[in-house]
Image (cartoon, rainbow, N blue to C red; front, side, top):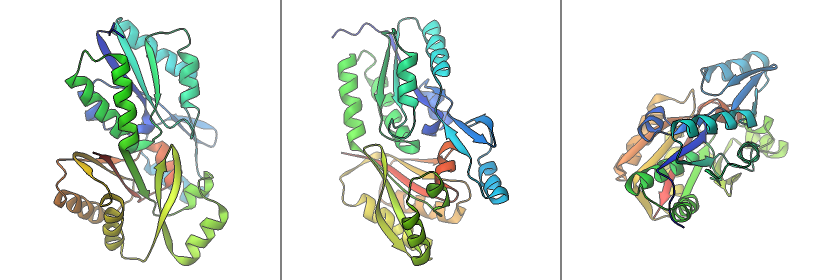
Length: 288
């Protein structure tokens, strides 16, 4: 299929937690997801995530989240098409099994032949990694045909790996991500579950016990990375509000010693913090 587009514009949701400098560097358009406190709806990334934690401590309630709505996608498509009339909009979407983003985006693009949707099957830093790799590929291959671009994107999705170690399970339990039995068992036994994103879903794959977080994170890094032939170009270290700075820097130092060239420290935004809570840490890498 001959490439009829003069420019490819990547669009993604704020729940990707894509760093602003990367969005600017690759001209990526971000549309908002939403966080709701007691009926008041706020755009993700427009307020400090500390408000989510403060709200929980004050009320013992967890805010709720919602997807980008149809109107917001329509407005974004229109603005991009007006600015770049001969462009392809490549929508690298937040995991379709977790929210209505993919469905809403499809409804908004009905009749628009210049919009292509791909479910990244990831959230937060996982989605960011896919956006980064695809943006780099487009920069290197500006005349790439759509079929080839889609094939490359699906390969990136297949080879991206993401895990996250939450500091507490209250937020995951409130969002229905862990059962009440698992929540009680983990609290009683002092277990910390490692959450991996597998085919778009959050799956607990390992459990750690203990209070020495530096040692736990070292084990987590070894367990998650060493079984793979990982690409040393890029790695994302995802952290949430409240993590100990010494812990974060120690984890970064471990990753540096492994030889990674570009280490991106990405803070979880409002949507992810609402579901995972404070002081969590995650890793996203790309497999060769």
